[in-house]
Length: 298
Image 1 (cartoon, rainbow, N blue to C red):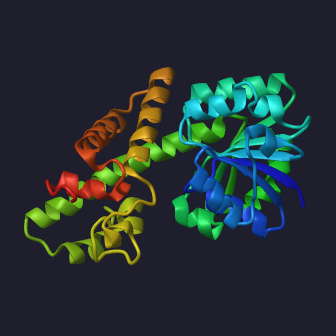
Image 2: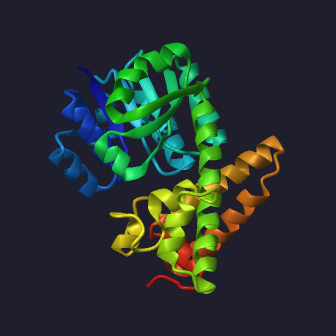
């Protein structure tokens, strides 16, 4: 068993760090939100008062943070991970962030002699709690082999998608498709409703037909479709609309960098941006169906 510094004890980081503790690792946790630190201690982590304390004595440092700016600050600032990590420590960032930030931080880590992976995750808070995350790693062969024992605790579907940077690139493409599919499912469901179809029967049929996609089948989008879905709980979030907007923004930044055409991705970003600006950014992503149907969620 090893000592792990874990930075970012939020909706995803808390259950992930708890699973590492349950597996027998010592987890030194740090977050800037005091409530998150209390929750980390309750989950069996050792509360660290700073990034430096989290990194002290750790063979591995794991982070999962909201945006590229946060990752840059945590790793590159004075007293950050690159200043504080033990020589030879493995660095694993599991955030979904922009490719420019990935390259900047990994380049700085490599220049200081660290092995660093990008390993964003999918399947949300449920997957984090249950240890069933999809983990998409960009890493050298050696780095992936070192990280794999931790990934086996955190997830069930683990992919080495290429060299460092490829993990975030893969996740950005995936999440652009997911955002488009949320719009697609919303339009189909609401068209069915508005032309007078039994929407639950429509859902049953389409879920087994060529119009099915993961947001429709996995989320249901509307109450009465998928048991335990956010729609059954007034769209309390597992993955917020604002996080979807962020990931769609990342896709458009990547498209611009690559000179790629993504018109549906651009339109999905515009729709989610408008939805978030309307005051619904902290609802679950699936709540977009109410916006598409002209039924803003209260």
